[in-house]
Amino acid sequence: MAKILHLPVVDSTNNYMKNQIDSLPDRTVVWADQQTGGKGRLGRNWSSPVGNLYLSMLFRDPACDISLFPLLCAVAVSRAIKSQAKVTPLVKWPNDLVLNGKKICGILCESVISNAAVQVICGIGVNLNLGKEGYPPEQLPYATSLKIETGTEYSIEALAQGVSAELERIVNIYLKKGFAAFREEYESVLINRGKTVKVLYQNQTVTATALGIADNGNLLCQKEDGTVLQINSGEASVRGLYGYV
Ligand code: BT5
Image (cartoon, rainbow, N blue to C red; front, side, top):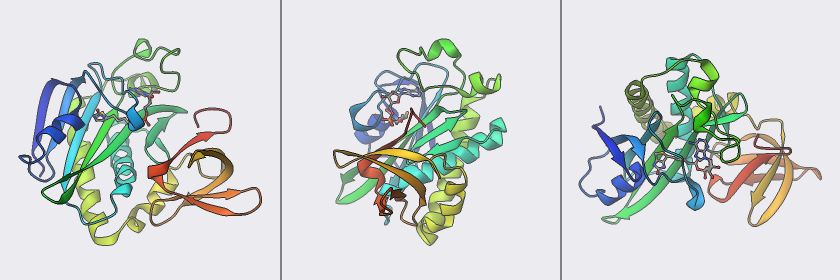
């Protein structure tokens, strides 16, 4: 079982891990009540007041394609939420979890080279116990929390344990069998599937229909002229034609 550290406050659980990377054992988990500098992808912010889950888990030198980690995290969080809140969030490829059309979880996986090996830090933020006042529409129009959607409060610690145990289990299977072992499960909750999406890809916007996921985690999209594109999660973001999903 992974070692789990709990901090009352930190700038970012991902940064905390990066700063201590050489002294933390494989599969260490750190979670915090609050982040003062929570990070999203591409330099964006992650709103991180008290009441939500902010967690990072370290995988030391996993001999695999690290671009799949956001997808593995999405499966882990989706399972943990389903087991504790009895609702099934959908996945907006590659790394958002969505409930009733709004974002309840964001994932930021970062790789760090240390001692000539690639270490992967999986950062996960889940909106749990904040009410509507936590997500002002003028700032976070696409955000929601499990409490808003289900009317119940949840134990942050229990979800931290559930997410880390699932993620460890999933990564162990992935290391033996590859992403193919999770492709079907991922596709079954893929909100983009069959929808027309706008893909921001290599500085271009392409409109296409999302078909599904390849065994390597790429999003398969078909353009109007029939051409099928494989989009790598590291280089693209996807929006619905008329909004967030
Ligand atoms: C993400 O980025 O969704 C990745 C978020 C990862 C957060 C975790 S918390 C633990 C670990 N430590 C960190 O410092 N980070 C990780 P991205 O796809 O770039 O989405 C960021 C965008 O989501 C922002 O620009 C806002 O529009 C929106 N956003 C910010 N805070 C939000 C929140 N709490 N809930 C929903 N949406 C939010």
